Length: 260
Image (cartoon, rainbow, N blue to C red; front, top):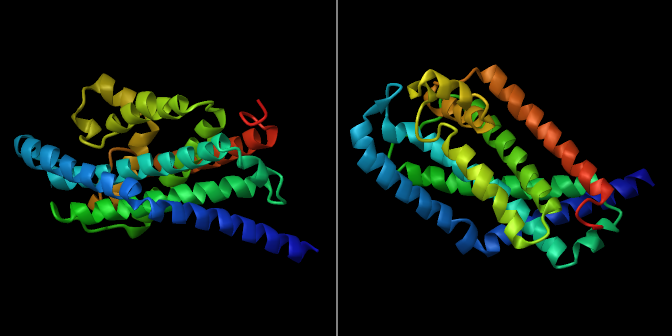
């Protein structure tokens, strides 16, 4: 009985993941191409044009310094965007109910959508990494830091997209958070600069931005330098991932945003 149930749950979970992956690949013109084009423009404008005036940052060429930040920014926005659009689309299309009445437990439903967001974040992040190699030299010095920072960050924001989709009642509400919260935090998270360049008060304020720890951890994997304590950074990322997963499962169990 348990083996049969476990097999059923595994098939359901795998189906969600495969469906999400197929969705990413099927609309590659919307999911993969735009981030690659945007990253190219960032490298040309910020890296080549502005970077010449900036010079070196932390002992590294400016183009090389911002490359990890741009990759991480892409991972964050795509992990978040994939889940928020997919889950809200299921709500809007009224086929989410079919999933909820299935024998699949809610925590596996959340995990399936989150893995879909991680897949898109990693896929698009890999494409932007290839793009960055046309502009600068980028060699991983600490592979574990690179992989772990990518996975933890994409999990956190994929789950963030899930929570946003649960509360959203229309398409305007799924764009509110990335516009007014996610984008400002990302740009102020050390993507284009080192927080060590900021005055003391701004440096202290930046330490309250969780994205700073994610970007710095990822940058450490490539450059071997970080603006933050890595132990604190991993503590924040792991805690955020656990909290967001628990929150998403709790909201789904309560029927928040679904039974309203």
